[in-house]
Image (cartoon, rainbow over all chains, first blue to last red; front, top):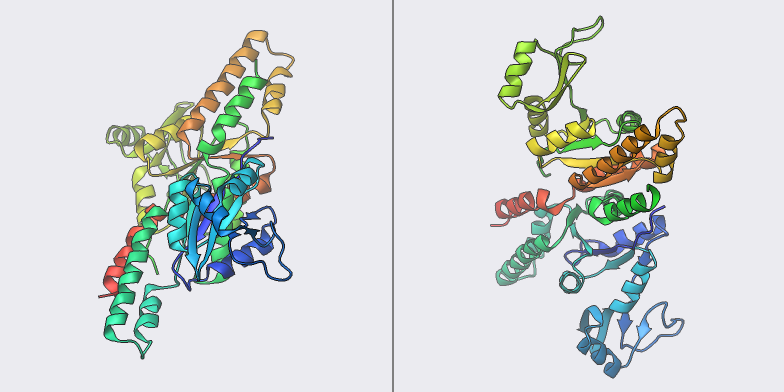
Length: 206
Length: 206
């Protein structure tokens, strides 16, 4: 009845919190979601397909896309670029499909700058006690390293402010249910759909 | 882990859209939700209990509560007052329970004024075509009455702007699922919970 653009959902959070597991479980349930295909300069491996596993680009092509602001976010790991192409995301959204990104906190903040209308979900560790214990209990680490890690944890919490939702990953199935609720309820947001309803009213009732 | 105040959810929409049916079905599934008990000046009927079915008040008591702004909304039907007591709602929320109100559009707008931090859900008829047909097909009505009803429909749509969410009541089970998603996702809103998480971090990691 209502023609609606898709919504970009971004799942992020501290490394080790379980983003990948939540994303995989979510995609088992939600077949309408489109996963954003990344772009990379690393070589295509056997069995991989361009436009399925990655969009493969040369270094020059990738850097030209950066210069043209054609990437929602990017980073360099081990001499290879990885990034999220803006065109693919925007085309998929325009076709009415939701797009789902699962990325690191730094990447998510880049996406937020380039695409503020996205919905940003912060995956949180099961408890801060546990986070602290995990850090302190690495017996081999110096006190300085422990302090650095505690500071990093604090910084990550501060970054929560850029997000719309916080989901605690206490149990995968609870976290997935919450992410699914967020996806469904975002489609009911009045500011997204009221305009189309009013337009229908204008068209219908004359 | 996180101590959280409850959230006030208000379900409203044009009369006849099916608010009561959606609310009843929702309460079959969600036993944590508290239904707001109304206050009334009408006489207690046999089998009814004060504080369960209604809070029963005299006319003088009710009007004194109105004067003290102790009602989130009220209206008068057939010489009796009906209203939503602010104290009961606030006490229940403070205890950590969500409160659910199912009321007419005018009442919902009063609640919005008195309690803007509530979450307002507008239940929408299955289609505007159907709404229009329903109005026009009442063969007995004069053209003037049809026009008045079309205008009322327009006005109701305009009131959507005061709401946070719009849920189409195409099928009860879809509408209920959406309301449940809204309830769950609102509890994940970063602005509701980030402060507590940060506080925990302050308490934990020192």
